[in-house]
Image (cartoon, rainbow, N blue to C red; front, side, top):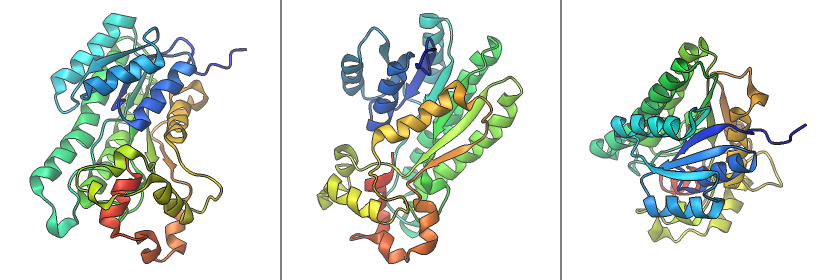
Length: 285
């Protein structure tokens, strides 16, 4: 019996030039899938393909805020492989680093455009392709632990991820009638050099190891430090037949933080910087 959980499957992963998307692409290939990674960061995308191996992985430029590009990417998948079994809609941005009193509305619109509308477009066009070809596929979106609780990130990001979760729950009911599953992975996230050098956050010179230690200290699950592969493993589960009867689910991967919030005072979560600045830099994909 094969131990490859995605053997022969064809998967599309957006936002795959980032740490979580790359980890998912790598893991999907390891489990036998053919993967197309889509992003707007062409150079990084090409590097990911080269590191994984072009025999089973390729890159396609796709800005998820442009519906035509989303549609073209799905068509590219079908032309290249003749099918589309898995879609991991992982593209997202942090948005304005502000509370509601100081939110820049144009920046908020951009976060909604990428995080919500981009997800809708991806579900729409991949769902259409699966329905037309009678593919009982799996569509996964990256939401956030911030969609389970308020106060874990900037108001714009939090709003967009709550909205995305609503989209997934609604779409799962519609597409479930065709045997297509739609689910979410909601990560607390990971401290990486890339997230810690995000514009607006870089000036704090945050060290990933220090941040990991602080975040782990307020999670109820001890003895672990969340890494991109941990999020990828959750996506792998939802992509595989092991989750064949799971639909409309929000799989929270947060080390127990959301439940732990009830037992920790807010000032513990603030760590050493205001939560509206620190938490987005550290924990969100």
